[in-house]
Image 1 (cartoon, rainbow, N blue to C red):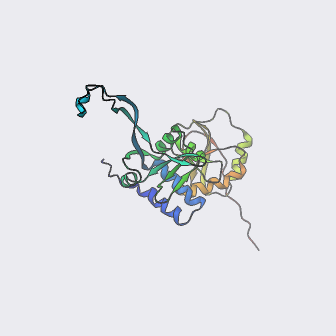
Image 2 (image 1 turned 45 degrees about the vertical axis):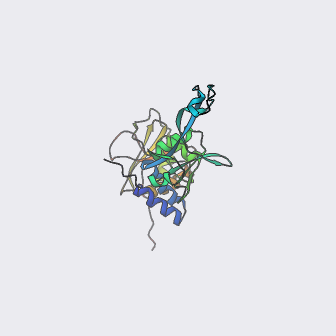
Image 3 (image 1 turned 90 degrees about the vertical axis):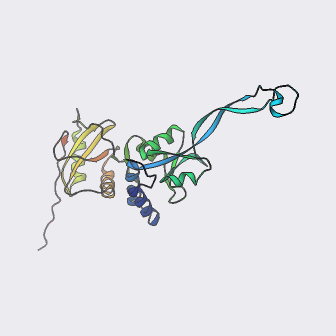
Length: 259
């Protein structure tokens, strides 16, 4: 399918919501949309070497017969456009092609996923990414960059992240019974059919089976409710009804009736 160069609709909508009313929930929507959106980085050609011309002066009309001494670029490479800040360099990321061409003369748009853009920013030594710099100006911190670059979506205000990759999740070889008990308490009363503790490429993962579909914002809100119970970061993801993992007892909260 041909790329039209237009903005990703889900990311554009999330950015408008965040710009209108910034909040952890609105930020969670942007991060979740960015992880899979097609965005654009800006690159420019920079000279990497030069040489002195060896032609005779007649070539430039002087008639002396000596070397011209004219310097010309011999090689060039494409370099990522960055922004200078007080705490380090940032990388601007654009929603569409006009955003790139209107930002810097001679800049060329390079399509990337949000995850790839964050990875490229880290490779360039950046400490931040600015999404839609001429519009929403949404700034990703270095910790958010690191999470997104590895395929996880950070949950604002917590030590948790949700997974956006399809890496294998398997049954852990060892499970701490205290962790299972803690998770069972933390999940009490949540609208879940089941939960399982799994092992992923980067460590433990809590897989949940919700009673209804959860939006990115709802998943972030659930992660925020779990955070006070956990002593270490834990990935959170939605999993199918059946699959690998160690079951976490999920109990519905009991309510007493008044007389």
